[in-house]
Every structure is written in structure tokens, then in C-alpha cells.
Length: 316
Length: 211
Image (cartoon, rainbow over all chains, first blue to last red; front, side, top):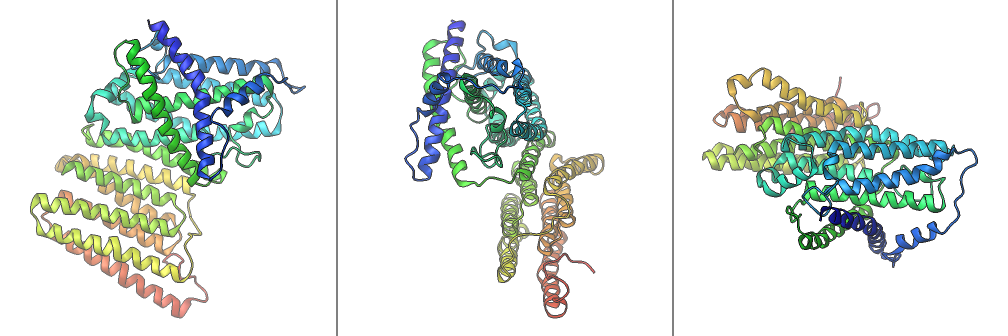
């Protein structure tokens, strides 16, 4: 049963992650009073890219070609261990906790940077440099957020965190929790490359993560893009299931309840996508050096959460 | 009451961090106005719970003077000169946000190693942290209006301190209001007027208060 549900979760994330991007793109265009592409456009793009020939830089080593496959499989692994449509651990759930998941995200980031350095492209190097400098400041925030949840739940297991948030209204309405939610939301915008941090355009001024995969083409680019979609889907799911709206996630093993929750979860994702699209359409991009101020504020929220915990003794 | 105090207290700390983040004077002044309204709500609730008329009067005065009048006065001043953007942060913005946070932590440590033992109130570190943040806001910006706001933030912290820990202490209340009126409206008004009339050729009237 658990294996079957794991497979269901895997298919759910892998197949629906491009759709969320499609809905997001459609919404942002609608906000600008344009017709916008079909919500299935990311699927068409992936199909087109898988059928195209790959062009590899002459100077790149075999690692360059290997890394998209490695990172994609690591994203698939993450899909199996995080609470997406269940609040009970699936077959592979006990393998990693929050820190483990963070480490795998970190490993994927490191592999991508190695690949971009290996491409010897100046633009890819620029992307690596920007991602590293912002990531160096963003990682401590993520760690602080995990520590705060560790303090609340006495564990680092995302499933336990979900169960506590679902059942304990004291923790759900606490100031500690909401400061963490706010910090995580800011990190989410940063990690998923949304405005005010990154604008996806063809000029290099706004590129951060986008520049890393600049030398890829064909199937490798498709895998990098699809991996990016899955990453966004996973982070949004963790934000929804563990942080902001941890309700209705089935805590007992059951096929029907999981199926029903899949629909609810997708609805939650669409609402979050709508919020993202609204932010995307109302906020202008920061200058690159202003991003550090944004990260500093997110860090302040995460630190204040811990301070609130100590000041109130966890009673607020 | 403790919960309202903690929520308003941490809201104040967050709002000061937000002020450190902003470069537009108008946003800083509006944020200060919001923080003053939050303090007045806290004082109002405190006054009702403790049945203390002084606190109710103080809440009304806070909302009227610091929530409305002073922000209105400041905004009117820089509207005349089309100056909405602050020009010279002496400490880089990202660094000042982190430093402001460090001052909050320092406030917590200082409070817990000093007067906490006699007061035994957990949230007492918030006003001290806010006081440090206000003082830091003054030294981190080279702009007369931001410095005035930093001064008032420090004063807001006194209101929180007095309102929550010593609600029966009328001296702090009256002293606070008096300082407010003297410090902000009169002195700053006179200084700005003097600068306008006498030294406006050599010193920009929005420059920091010094000399």
C-alpha cells in the first residue's frame, strides 16, 4: 500500500509540477491584460526540448552532460521523502529529515554550479557567482527555520511537524510559528526565483538561477527545467503542508483520503500560485545589491522567531 | 494583557527593522505612524483592563499626537521641498538591519542579566531592545527627519515600558508626552525655521542635527 502511495505521490508531483508553472505564467499575463500562453505550455516546451538535438560546449567535460540526469533523479528522490499528499511517512519517508532534505537540495545546487562552471560560459559563471553569494546568506535562514521547528516539535521530521501543526492550535496560532512562516515565505520567493528577487528575461541583469543552465540545450535543458519545476512544487508543498496551511492532510493510511487530499492540495497550490502571481505583477525587481537587504530582513524574522520563543517561554 | 503586550512589542521591533530597510522617507514616517497606533491600542487595552483613566488619556494622546499629528507635520514639511527619498545612509542598509537585530538580542541579554531578577517579567526585554533600536536608527541615518523618528521610537519604548511594567506611574506618562511635544514639535520646528532663515545657503535643512 505504502509503495503504491509513494508511486502515486511521485506521479502526482512529476506530472503536475509543469502545470503549476503554466498556471502561474497564464495568471501573470492575465494580470497584464494579455491573453497569455496556454496553461499546458510548459508540457509543450518540455516535449519540444526532448525532441531537439543537444549542443554541448566543446570544452565541457562529461560531467556537464551527466549532471542534469543526476539532479533530476535527486529531485525524484526528494519527492518520495517529503510530505506532499500524506501526513504519514511513505516507504522512503524515514530515510531523511528536514536537514537531510536540505542537504540534498544543497547537493543539487552544488552540482548545478559545478556544471555551470564546467560549461566555461561567462554568463553561467555570473549566475553561479550570484547564486552562491545570495545562497550563502539564505542558507542560515533555512537552518534557523528548521531549528525553530525542531524546538517546537522536538524533532526534525517533516511528518511530525505536520502532525503537530495540524493538531495543536496553540502552536499554530503562536507568534513563533507565524514569524517562521513569514521568513519561509520570503525564502520561498528567493529560492523559486520570483520577483522582487529575479526576473526571468533574456537580459543578464536580472538573471540569477536562470543563468546557470544557459549552456544547456535539448533533453538536458528539458531535465534541468523539469527539475526546476519539481523543486518549486516541492518547496511550495512543504510551505503549505508544514508551515502555513497544514490542515486536511491525511494522517492515517487510506487510498481514498489520499486521493481526495490530492485534489485539496492542488487547490492550495493554485491559491499560492495566485498569491505569487499577484506579487509578481505588483512588485518591481530589486537591484541586485538590494537583494541582500531582502535576505537580511528574512534573517531578522527567522531570528526573531527564536527570540520570541525564549521571551515567551513558548507560550505565545 | 501579557499576550497583547508581547504581540505589540514584537510588532514594534519588526516595524523598526522595516524602517531600517526603507529608503523612502514617506514610508518610514507612515511606518512610525502605524507603530504609534499599535502602542495606543495597547495602552487603551491596558487602561480598560486596569480601569486606569490615565492610560486611556495617554492612549488617545498617543494616537492623536504621534499617530496623526507628528507624521502629518513631517510629511507636510518634505512635501514642500519635494524631498521624499533619503539620500545618505551612514551604515549600509543590509548591515543596519542585522545590527538592529543584534541590538534586540543585546537588549534581551542585558535585561535578563540585570533587572529581570527583581521584576520577573519575561517580556520586559522588548522595550529595552526597542530603545536600542531607536538610538541605532538615529545614528545610522544622516537625515534630520529619520533622526527625529528614531528619537520617537526610543520614546515609544518608554511608553511600552511604563504602560506595561509600571502602569501606576504617572510621571513617566506626563514626562513622555512633555518630552514628545518639546522635543519634536517645538525644538525641531525652531531648528528647521532657524536653518531656513539663517544658514540655508550653506547647510541643507534636511541634514542631520549637529553643531
